[in-house]
Length: 80
Image (cartoon, rainbow, N blue to C red; front, side):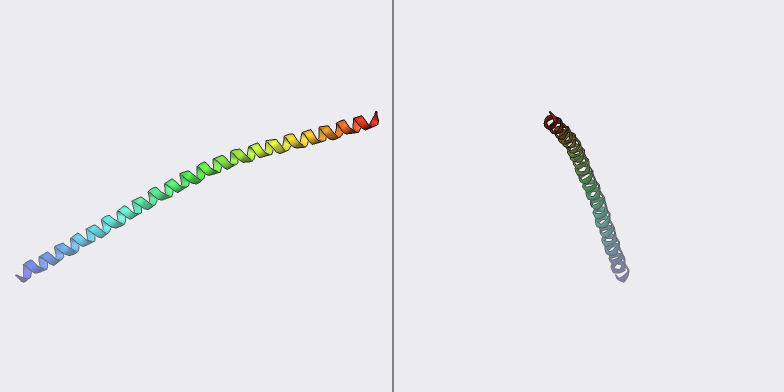
């Protein structure tokens, strides 16, 4: 009887260890999936913000050019 009890205890410990490993393995896999998801979200956000920044830079360049052209026009108008 002692032998079967010892064997049963060993089996229980073995099952518990495999459950712990399985749980930890699942946790690691879920964590990796979540990290990859966050990376995709941030990369998408970065791409969007870079696009907005390019549009703003273009608008600033255009506005600066228009300002200079208007100032030049005013200078010519004053001279006449």
